[in-house]
Amino acid sequence: MARLLITLLLVGCAAPTYPPAPYGYDLHAVIPDLTFDGETGPIRLRSFYEPSASTSHLLVLRVGAGWCGTCRWHLGHTQEMVDVDPTVQIVDLAVADDDNVPATTAFLSAYRARMDLVQTLAVDPAFQLRPSLIVDGPLPFLVVIDRRTMQIRDTLNNPDPDALALSLRTQLKKLNGTALTPTLSTDGADGFHRNEWDLLRDMRLPTAPPPDPTNAKADDAAAASLGRTLFSDAQLSPSGTVSCASCHDPTGSFADGKPQAVGVATGDRNAPSILFAAHARWQFWDGRADSLWAQALGPIENPKEIGSSRLFVAHALFDHHRAEYEAVFSSLPDLTDTTRFPPAGKPGDPAFDALTVDDKRAVSTVFANAGKAIAAYERTLRAKPNLLDAYVAGDGNALSDAQKQSLHTYFLIGCAQCHYGPRLTDDAFHVLRFPTGRRDGQPDRGRADGIAALLASEFTASGPFSDGTGPSYAALVASPNTLGAFKTPPIRGVANTAPYGHGGTLPTLLDVSKAYGTAGLAPTDPAAVGDSEPWLALFLGGHAPELVPFLDILTATPVP
Image (cartoon, rainbow, N blue to C red; front, side, top):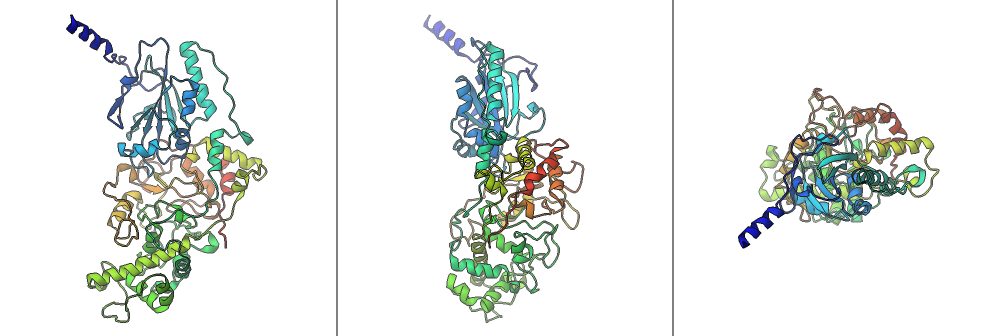
């Protein structure tokens, strides 16, 4: 008898059989019994199925990403969904981390830290819910499910708080016949929703950049003074005609206004402004440097840019800036012996490769210090407030009606998922299929090659010339979504820095808006490589020109 009772109890507690096929992703279809990787193991949708419940309860699957600004707002306001109805169950699914690397469970602790309420958390790098998308749209993407039938009841892309609450209440009314409680409007000034105003307030003018523990002289005034001199010193180049300022002109918002950078030769990519570079997680379009000082070194030894070498730079410092250098760093080696220290050379050159191990280290240290001085100077750069700053600060008349409508379009079509925060960028890497700028016409592989270059570099935050302990890149690999991916450029300052795109092939703001709105070039076009992301918002025909009035106010005039 006891054994029979135990058997009956076990049967009674067993999970109910998941609703039978047909499954699908359309409205009112039974969603397939998907499985996700959770913090402590697999999570199956069948675990939320409750066919015997007396009333229907809602399950919300919310897809987001670490890099996504609109997702961050929703994560921080999760409690509001439960406030609509305490039985709402939320499963948060992260598809990618802050850099747009496919999410693993190791990322979930960082994702959790952005949430005001956590119920169930998992990763879904394959984006299994993509078939539920009615149209490609911005994250977060929400799928609302009736737990009593596991049928999809609604799908939403980045809903405003009112739209989300109305959806949940409407479904509960349809399913249970409950009263539809009126939704209180969360509109703010000029018709912007509360979430949009929160994002606007975060678009504050950048001030001091974050600390750089890899550069002991990052905020040293004497180092910045030396760096300012080196930034414009053509004596660091054997040609005597090129310096950092050649492509990053202080009078041109620290850009050059050319399609591709022009140093001792024409390069393959557009030279972005470095006005806010000190705030970035990664440097260069492909992220092949992880610090500002390492970025400063790259163009110096690039044969198309400054066309120099670390031995040449060491000699230039010894001959022209010795006192200033030694006032900041240690004494320079005695470079008068050109037999020991040839006039020029870098790794791969016979002159440099013939040096002793100690002399190689000494020359490379001097070279790294030059980059650290230039970085110290770049960290002092600031910009003047623009019209957006005035508007956010409370001047409702700072923007015209056309500019406000343009800002509405900016939020409507999902620009804020990637372009948010003080610099209006997520610092992540995305495939947009913009045209190549390479001189040979070949598509630019972007982040896929940038990762290889980063891993091969000796000038990294964890390398021998760093002043601190940086991250390990042992797990960093070029995943499929890095092919053709480029870093999201800050659009604070975009009005001053035409032309656009990593290849510099888009002359105007209207051109770049149109390119975004069509997901770049067609998949068959050989001028780009990589697959566009499903959350890249596709515009209606009129949206691109509607964006331009807002983009026009995003100036960044350097403070003298």
